[in-house]
Length: 150
Image 1 (cartoon, rainbow, N blue to C red):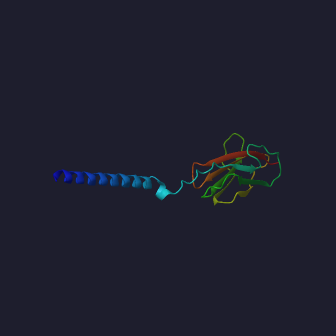
Image 2 (cartoon, rainbow, N blue to C red):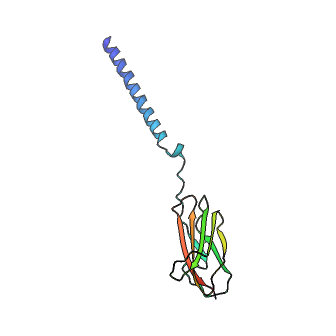
Image 3 (cartoon, helix red, strand yellow):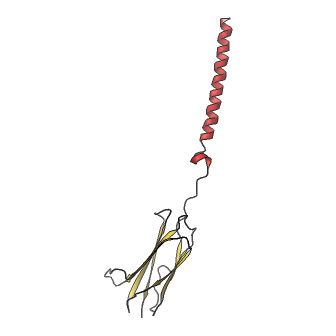
């Protein structure tokens, strides 16, 4: 009789062990989805691709103006939009302060226009453009071009 009781206890322990093992596997699989309940990880933000008109790196012929600039975001627009900073200064080697600066703090427009004003007469000028993602601050694009007034 004692042997039968021991066999019943062993069967019960075996069934309990199988139950606990099965439960652990199911629980482990359910929890392994990660990311707050199994959602997908959002794709990484694409690096900014920007074009300017006048083109980045160009030297424009002397003109009387107006001195227009178009900044176009060609990459996928970051979810938070972008910040666009434009400045212009004389390019005479003396590192003068900017005579023009304009900032659009937040935009989701793919194209932004600027008119550079206060250009000194008969001077070579450097225009610098910086575009920064508002959803990933390390995602930036910087470009420049030169122009001169007659």
